[in-house]
Structures are given as structure tokens and as C-alpha cells.
Amino acid sequence: MTGKRASGSLFGLAYGDALGKPTEFLSVAQIVDRYGPAGPRDLTGDPAMVTDDTQMGLAVGWALREAPAAAPDALEPVLRRRFLDWANSPDNNRAPGMTCLRACGKLADGGPWQRATEGRSKGCGANMRVTPVGLMPGYDLDTLAGVAQLQAGLTHGHPTALAASELTAYAVRMLRDGAAVGDLPGLLRLRAAEQRTTYRADWLGDLWRWAEGADPVGFIATGWDECLGALDRLAAALTDPDDGDDPCLRTGDGWIAEEALATAVYCAVRHRDDPVAALARAATTRGDSDSIACLTGAFLGAAHGMAAWPAGWAARIEYADQLTALGAGWD
Image (cartoon, rainbow, N blue to C red; front, side, top):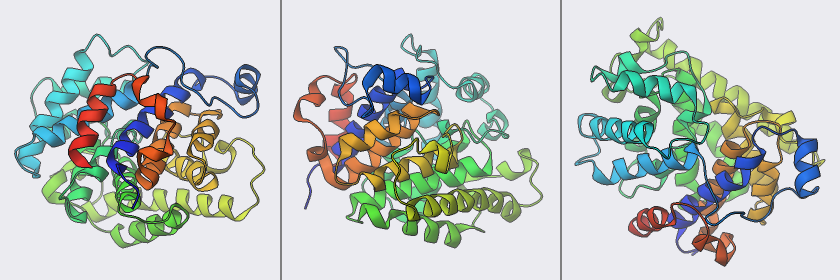
């Protein structure tokens, strides 16, 4: 069995983030002009810098490690503290998402998180950081779902952000446990259909009220339906021959949660046997390149372990010490 899958996933997240960081706000033509048609395929800098995607992923990972129990009352305060530590850090200078910053500003007031969240936001900031939830040992699928939605909900209260975060963590879990990368689209669609009417009140409380939902089931079903639509577009894109073009043209630009998931899965499936090519493809996009690439890396790292990545990269990536510590504890 492939070894060090948790480490492979965490480092893959950071590698994709680093490769996508300089391309995020460029057109595909500009990226090709800078890196060639194959896209960025090596880390640059010493260390290679990452963005808030990796920083917040680490915040979630350490919160999971520090929480005294996998329960809402135990985990929420630790997540809140870790998010506020990130928001106030001098290293939080990597073009962080405004949704996260606004929500953290309100979380600092100490009130219920359901009042602090940005209820209309389904940005990919909800699921770019959720990978550690899929790697956490001992979580059953109900716990995984609750934790994934809670960590999303602290900042992104839209039901699609919740559903896409659960699906992203579920994808990492399935791949870590040995699912084939090519089977991932079908597994995600089945999970979405099964969970469509499940509102996790024990984890979300009355979030549906603050978000002005008609009722809990109607609220959450909206999010699952949007994810199912993204998965339908993904399935259609994978049916056609790969023309090598920008995957955002098929599955969306990735600024919103369901599109980041679908486009990352597209890149992972298309290049399942060449993880570095998958990261390069994800980074050569007109959309949210770092978030798409970080999720692509998290998926393929979970599937292949550390063997997916060039051996010298681990010593060159920012936050290598934290990635190593979390990964070693979960492998």
C-alpha cells in the first residue's frame, strides 16, 4: 500500500498552492508566456512561498489536533482561536479572502459563530482549507461531515460552501483509504445525493435561520443541489476527449466552492498518473489557480502518498516543519 498518504496530501496541498500562487491573477496566455505550454512544474524561491490556502489548512489541522474531543462545543472554540491567530498574524499578507477576514473580525467579538459568518458567501475559502478533516484518524463519516461543515460555517455560511467542504473532505478520505482516482466523480455524486436532505443541527445549530433559509432541509438541499450541478458538469467534461485547454472552461473558475472542487477533481482525474502534471494543469488556469492546484495536490497526495512528489520539494516548501509534524502524526 502506498505510504505516507496524510503527508502526501498535506504537502501536495502546499505544493499546488505554491505553484498556483504566481499564476492566480494571470490569464492562461500570460502563464504560458512565462512558463511554457506545460505550465509551472517546479517550486521557486527558498522557501517556496504559499498563500492563505495552506496557512488556513494548517490552522484547521492544528485545531483538530488540539481539540479535546471531536464534538461541536469542543472544536468550535479551538477553530475560532486558530482562525483569529491566522487573521492577526503578520504572515497573513498573501491576498487573503475578504470573506474570511470579515468573518474573523466578527468572530473576535466572541458571540455565536452563526452571527459572525458570511451567510451569502460560498467562496472556495470554505474548502481550500478542509483537507485535514479528511485525513484525521478516527473520524467516522458522520463526524467528518460535521467537522467539515463546521469549519466552513465559521466563515462561509452559504449551504453550498458547507456541502462542497464536506465533499472535499470526503474525497480526501476516500482516496486516503484506497479509492481509485478515476472513481472519485462517481463517489462524490453518490455522496451528494445521499446527503441532500441531511441538516446537521448538532454541528450547525440554527445557522439556517441566520441565513434566512425557509427550513433546515430546504436550506441545506440548496447547497447539495448546486454541488450536484457542478458534478454533472464535471462528468460531462470527463466524457469528452481532453483538449489540453484551460479546465476552467469546462468546470468553472474555482472562485466558488463547488467549482474549486469540480475543477480540481478534473485535473486530478485527467493526470492521475502524473501528479506534477496535474498541479501544472491546475495552475495554468484563468481562475483561482492556487486553490484549484492546492486541492488537486491534496487529492493526488492522498492517493499516492509522498511518492507522488519530487523528493527535493519537501525541503523547499514554506511551513515544511508544520506539514511534517501534522503528516507524521496522521500517517
